[in-house]
Image 1 (cartoon, one colour):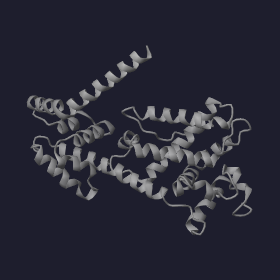
Image 2 (cartoon, rainbow, N blue to C red):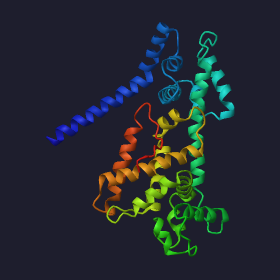
Image 3 (cartoon, one colour):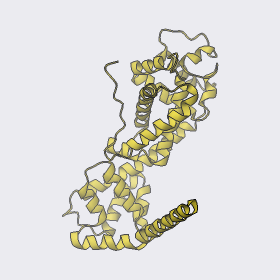
Image 4 (cartoon, one colour):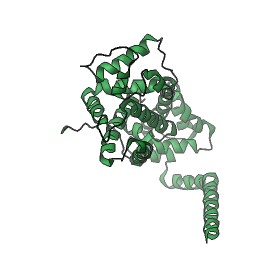
Length: 311
């Protein structure tokens, strides 16, 4: 029985592979040609006409360009911002689009390309921050770490730079620098951003993390959530969020705001789920991760922080 089921799955996967190959290599081209004969518009025009500005339009445009047989069109998804206008003109020329009739196409396509190139640039910027190792000899790094303490614990003076007090805000040892290894300065920058721009909410989450039964290590979990945000960005899963949220180039600030959403929502999720102990963290972290990924499948998704005014 198991052999039969396995054999059927192999055949099904083989069929899907063959179908995908035939569709992308042959059928898609003729289908696009046929529809253009009927509508008088190429696929890119139909996308820009058929969808309002946002994730659906930009992602369909991105797929169309990446699937094109034209190298020039495929190159457009990797265009630098300064070269976008030239790429738009090249596409209009190759596709023989009459911009006097379709007056909105040029602007719509340019916005899509700006978002596509902006997402790629955002990942580069985030990666550059992540690669920065926390350096105790770097005054800027040290000041940022001390700023985190002062934002979260304004009424408590830090006795010394290396102290067990760091455990009060969720670091593992006497010197927090060892906790930043995986995410580098990106982890610290996100923690500071949340604490600086949403001070009351950050302190409230910190207070929750000290719960006698459901508590967790605030800073360590925050760094873990930074890794989650980074992985989602790297995989492309955050494209719907940023394409809906930012009509142009997303900046580092937008990534930090996404972290704020994750930090706040994870705290609510953790207390709603009521794990037996912190030892189950990885299990519930993955459950939260899957919840976020499901949200990102929605066409109109934007993961923006909405503070609960009742608290």
